[in-house]
Image (cartoon, one colour):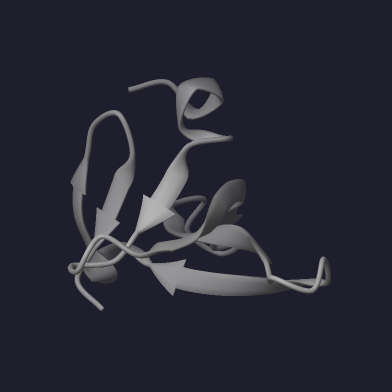
Length: 69
């Protein structure tokens, strides 16, 4: 999968609740490996916050990103 197709995907937890949208990738500067994803979480009141998930927390990537939490 190309990184450009991952950016913008919806992230949902194991119960189907939306956690936000993939905003960026986390890259380890020492190894140059992708270690996680940043999620832009938009709350009901319109505010937003950033959340980082590590690759081991991702269960499946398809039309959306399903995480194990």
